[in-house]
Length: 213
Image (cartoon, rainbow, N blue to C red; front, side, top):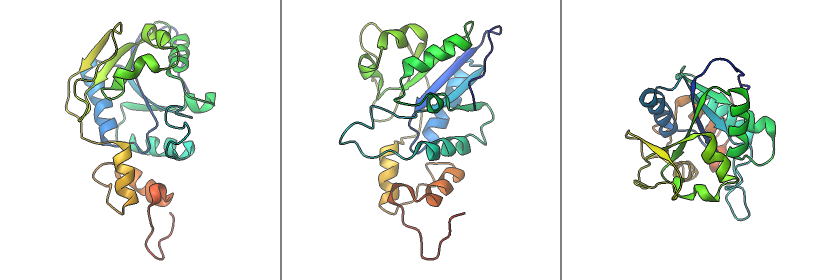
């Protein structure tokens, strides 16, 4: 899906960026809660092309971007109020939130942007590329993540806290569960579980004779 341009109609747009490796019910719950609680007109899941903080040396490999995009698109099929944007994939190279916000500001100059971040990453916002641009371009909304309750942006950042209870899920743990032969079906939509199996992600082993659909 391409970036929709609307220079005349003001709206409230929530942006939830991430690697989505894989997208899970925690992502969907946070997006839906933000939409309802903040009165957002749109909530967009932005798939990182090269999540530079996760692709540095000695980091575990990230699944191919085309597969991650397919999983996110599959995940939102039953969530008609959520959108998916491949803006960072089309831009190529490392994915910087500052660049994405700049493009959204250009195409939606009358809209208010809300950047949805987890309480696990909020304390590290000063370490993002061009943090001053991020801070000035969007309202920061912190989503409480289990295990990271109370994580907040550094001093000088204005932010809101999203009220809500979100599933205790993390991509790293889900990948480990699948690699160990466990079942991820309770953590991800069925369509995402199918793609994980079809592409043999996270070291999953197919049963003898199993065919890719």
